[in-house]
Image 1 (cartoon, helix red, strand yellow):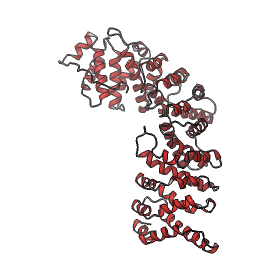
Image 2 (tube, helix red, strand yellow; image 1 turned 180 degrees about the vertical axis):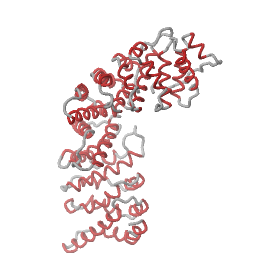
Image 3 (cartoon, helix red, strand yellow; image 1 turned 180 degrees about the horizontal axis):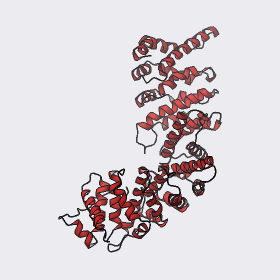
Image 4 (spheres, one colour; image 1 turned 90 degrees about the vertical axis):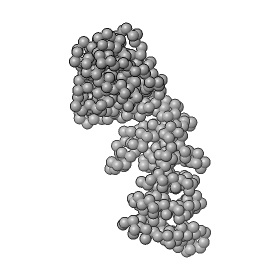
Length: 501
């Protein structure tokens, strides 16, 4: 059915007629009531058949402006719940499903939440399920059009209809996994950067959303639905974690202990058992990364380090067959180093991370290599700032013991290495040879020449760290002569440069 045909089927006259039919009161004789209900359901079936699965923005806008949506919502708010069939909700469900934020915002302006929240108490599980999905879809327009760090803009309007409690009540009914999952995710989005003050709700919702990270069975046969649930669960946890209390619940001591034990488990047994162990570890690490990424929470990082998780992760880097070390493993370690304080990086250095990280930078997976070299430079950076000018870098020997100097230098020459990889590798070497001669002439010339080319790099992190690396190298007379051979001078540091890569 093309757009022209759809516009003809649902022309202005037809939309006006449907809007009129939906406004008709049903408090009449039994025969008249039956006739009105039948006419309304026929109209709604027509609407659904035309708009279901089709993203026809202009037609949808015409439907919204016709008054039909207000008529739905009045029925949802006023009519006896038992008399509302799924047919009444289907068109609104279709209007909110897979439509643009612009469309959802237009629907949000119609104040849809009181009517939809009332439908959550419907005895028909399918209607309650359609209602929570419609609520969530409209919520998304608020999520997507405001800053991620801001509380959700629809929180108050949902709360006014006692929506938080009613969504939680639907979650607790436990009749339908479909509704239960979507209720939990809806609340996760609603409490973006906001504490769930009810401790029971906070614990139950967070635990359920965490369980969805490893959820491979959404009625057993819908891979797209599985992927959607997992992705929205990840987002919900990130939103919740912007509040300190929620974040502490997500990664409480019990959770950290479980992750530590899972990482300690050797990958042994049948192929199926090995797969399950690896999957459990990856889910644990995904959770850690979700919560750590971008969060300037040094206390949480210190708790993770003291829990034994870092020790077990480094054991995996050092001893595990290299092929199964995926981005999830390396990314978690990187998130521990960025953003973090001097104290956190020093605590990480005490865990002797370099044998494991150096092993990662020779892997074929360049994304894992990127995490490893970025983690190394973040730890080295803080070692540099704590080192007296005349002393060698405190981590030089530890990296040299695992042949790290040569392997970092080799990364610079890899064909698949990105510009950032190569630049970061050279910055690492510049830091490592703090006040210490690079005795290999070829290496010295390449490192210093490359760093000098980056002195005006458009990336502020690169530019500032290159200046620091050159200053560290210049504390040795031989290195300094190489740096200044062509009259080059090291410019002053920019203010407020970023420390972490």
